[in-house]
Image 1 (cartoon, helix red, strand yellow):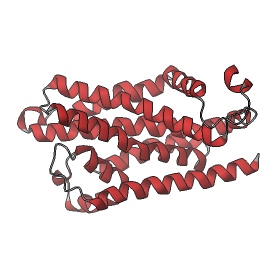
Image 2: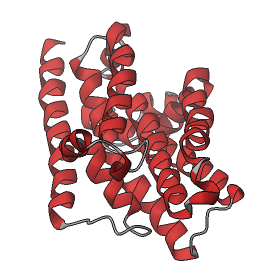
Image 3: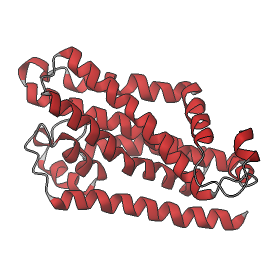
Image 4: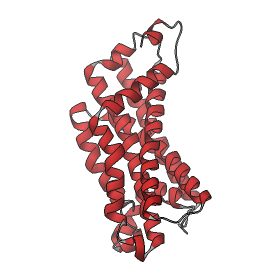
Length: 251
């Protein structure tokens, strides 16, 4: 922190602050549970039955749970903004050379770095359990799962500025679970009732799942789905920018 506070001139990104963010997140036991335990447990819960009977569905669930774990990690890091605002930490940072945009970029960077962890764990468990993908498919699904987590980093920041600290995390838990269920992350959509299949395309998790699974499935991915991902990311970034500007004007 001292390096950040003694630096001259505006700072749009601080590696020192990024390291502090990562260390603080990893000291949080609840964050570690989200990163290390929930994704592989959910993968085994939803995917174990497909392991021997349907290898394709087993791989489908594996990638979906990797996306889900990364979504939980990136969203929770972004949503911590709500707690920091309530504690006055964001006002404290404004006494340093770190620009507000640097603060947001650092949050996004920390979220994306931590989002790699559940992806690696779930894919590692899948490989141990016998998932059969080519080398190129392993790399592709890992990279695409990580890339798609950007939209949830933006979503977490948006919620962090939108909802008071005491309600943000309680709100996110059920919302992320519902988005995952209705978006087809918890089980293949073709096994769900038609009404739920009709709802799925309205969820941001739907396009994310299609993109992440596209190397291993005939997912029907089209440019329109990529557009959906860009649209959802744009909505959350724009919402964060508006709320961030309003929050800054209050101080």
